[in-house]
Amino acid sequence: MGLILLSGGEAVLAERAIADFIANHPEAEVNSLDASEIEVGAITDALSPSLFGGNRIVVLKELQDLDSDCADELLEYIEQPEDDVDVLLWHKGGVKGKALLDKIKKTKPTIIECETIKKDGDKADFVRQEFKRLNRKVSTDAVQALIDALGSDLRELNSAISQLSSDVVAGKMIDVEDIDKYQNGRVETSGFDVADAAMERKQGEALIALRNALDTGTDPVMIISALASNLRAVGKVSGVSRGVRSFDVAGELGMAPWQIDKARRTLAHWTPDSLTRAVIAVAQADADIKGAAADPIHALERAIIVMTS
Image (cartoon, rainbow, N blue to C red; front, side, top):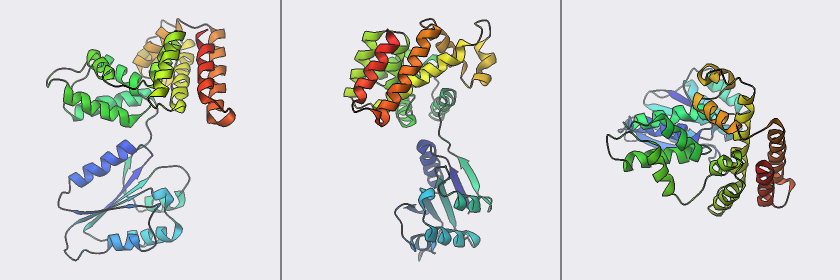
């Protein structure tokens, strides 16, 4: 039995790690606590020996929110742990609660990295691994298509992978056509649909996609994030010679090869001046959406019109 530290803010990875650990110990009694909600004594109670004996698992989430008294309680237990208890601690990262985290790390717990997945290349690895976990094969183009559609939300990606693996006939490689069918079955439009149309300078399509996305609940922040992400990708590849293979510069640019290929295709729609105007417009829209203007929808529309003009 031991101490396991889940480090990072990617909820999908942390929750899966916890669920997998519990599933691998079906005989254990499980007690889950939220550090932001508990009072002094709750940790001691959870870690106290059971009247019925047997192995136990105590999960403590939101470790960064644990108050000082409860932190002392936890550290006191860690100094003299019970043999029949596994303790899983989830800290989402950042400076909050770092002093406690450093003390815990000195005890050399088993660490499971759950860092937020931001780069599309890492998301592509995640998608491939998830399909592999479900014993499904997926084409490279299908991985890209799925990330383009849902890449801003790992939970949505995970849900889509599960649904596709269930819906697509067993034994068939999941391809772009399957992704398209899945997308057509979803009512909502994602921020990446808006961004893709805008990056191709298709003003009408981009504005329609924007309205559809907003009408079906897509957060304006996610839309502006998708626009900024696509612009950054195009900006990165703009200084790379066309003769250089995408695979050779993937590490340097921090992008997957397929991302570089996509950005290069998109670059054909842009000049240095139009790209500069687009970056300024999106930066202004980002500030507007985050509080500098009363109407975030108007800010998004204005940015898209500038980008596609």
